[in-house]
Image 1: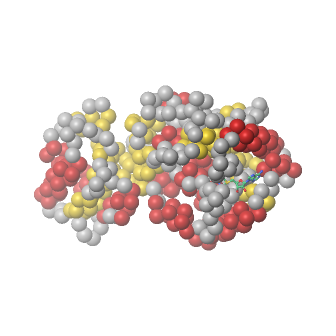
Image 2: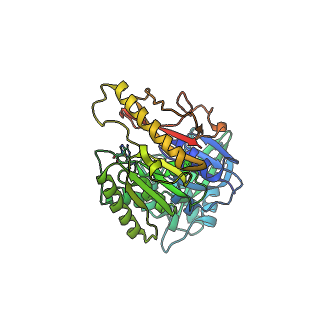
Image 3: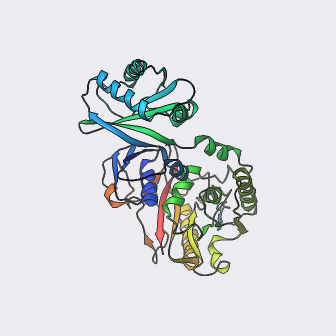
Length: 392
Ligand SMILES: C[S@@+](CC[C@H](N)C(=O)[O-])C[C@H]1O[C@@H](n2cnc3c(N)ncnc32)[C@H](O)[C@@H]1O
């Protein structure tokens, strides 16, 4: 079967993550928002819970000529819904998402035609619409489209119009419950977005769920708690700050109770630049971390901040090298100031890994940094994040 992934706000990160989890073969980047996986058997519900950067997973059901007359397309969609849509007690509820089909395609008009067709089959239905051309995961979830009907996604490939049926949506409620409900926050030091934490963990491609996963700048424990939920069993969080360790402990306990997990991460107050004195050589499988990114305010003297961070990261990386097992990976986000000032700590012993497979790095809509790394930023942010993957 062929599937599509509807990608999140940072599509290249999403693609890197999917490639790390599923392998890059049979992946085709269709347009900025859609990645296709061919010839696969995918457990969509489970997979979307693991990924941070995918909004929807859908199965490709059919393709037709892009100039197919509307009535004919409506009939085909109605037949598809009859065959594949979920059925609850009441009306069949369906929605249509236009993923950049273009031309004279109008999802609303098509929806009304499909309703009429369904009526011909004695099926009463409700069409869910939204202001946007694409239904958000929230709209799909709130209207229970996947339990009471279906969402069909349309996209164009050359002269064909593809029709996909959504199988799973990102668990947005759960994500926001964790984001806003966690008992301990540190908005001053900053907390990593949960989805970004997941993408980083997945990009680390840990070899086994029972290897040790370490976050040596764990802050409030975002990476630790997401790793707990992703099934990692041996997790260590360390941080220089006593308050951070207290926050991490409280958040991990909250997640453990909320989800009934039997996973007990270990936390220690430790300086990342002296970790090799505490952890035995070659015992850690993977390191995933958002380190100290520099002062929150006062970026007047960029050169001084860069020099300070380069020293910190070089010393920390030297320690990471000692405690990592051979072939183990470090995944970090480093700051890029104003989108142009990159850090250059000492990396002599490390093998840098490109997060995005080579086959995707020359696609017109992909914007990598001058050193082929992925960048993450939101409008107006002064400090961007750069994804760094290093292998021992
Ligand atoms: C950007 S915060 C990490 C936030 C974390 N990713 C989260 O989502 O909560 C950076 C953390 O690095 C810690 N830190 C700074 N210097 C350190 C050092 N030398 N060793 C260990 N931790 C350090 C700070 O106390 C802070 O908690």
